[in-house]
Amino acid sequence: MGLLTGEQLQSLVDQDNLVSTLGFSFDGKLLATAGDDLHMEIWDVASGVKRYEWPAHTGLVNALALSPDGILLATGSDDYKVKVWDVSTLTSNSATPARAVLTFELPAEVKSLAFSPNGKRLAIGVNNGTAKVRGFATGEELLTLRGHTDAVVSVAFSPSGEHLATASLDGTVKLWDTNTGKEIFTLSGHNNAVMSVAFSPDGKRIATASRDGTAKLWDAESGQESLTFFGDGSGLNSIAFSPDGKRLATGGDAGVRVYLLDMDDLVTLARTRVTRS
Image (cartoon, rainbow, N blue to C red; front, side):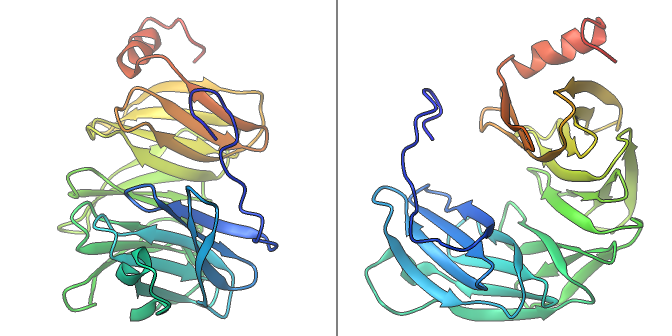
């Protein structure tokens, strides 16, 4: 979709299966998708042509993440596995398929993934309520984060990489120190599962989206709630900041909403209680 006009730019017609997760490469030229056929597919965004396809897992792929340098693609599945693929060859016309360079076994279904900003660590949200952080130098498990009482369905590193936010079906978001593994605080305020969490590009704010139909903005340092966005009551599944941090988009049962006010203005509105609380 064109962001200025809403015009559809491309349709990937060869994907006949349910698309369970997708993600752009950092240069925006390629789109990775996973479907209920358990395959990964790589598409050329400009032409809409499927460039590569390969069998990835033996269970539904719930999450994928591309490394900041575009070399690695991590996929997480209901088969209790995370696989890390070398996709550096996929930017050429080579027919060589991606190869799995690492495979991690998890104690339950994998629900979410995120690379650290430096690409050296991978956060993994697991269906048993834990989150794990793995290192790529040795493939070792660096941290196991325990505290949620239900599946961790979204994970996000802060821009500095020093903090990790985890969102859960238990209705809370937790912030963790990625050096020590200690919990810093819990964000409680939603009345249903929190499906998505994101940091603002400057790291000062955390945004959350919930099945209770609201999105919330929080102060990343204090954990204080700054603002609640009320939609039409339909459940929300995802949330994201624009790269400049001045726009916030939510996706849910009723479609996509983009909040166009400057984020600083939104916080000012919240403080003056112009919006609902």
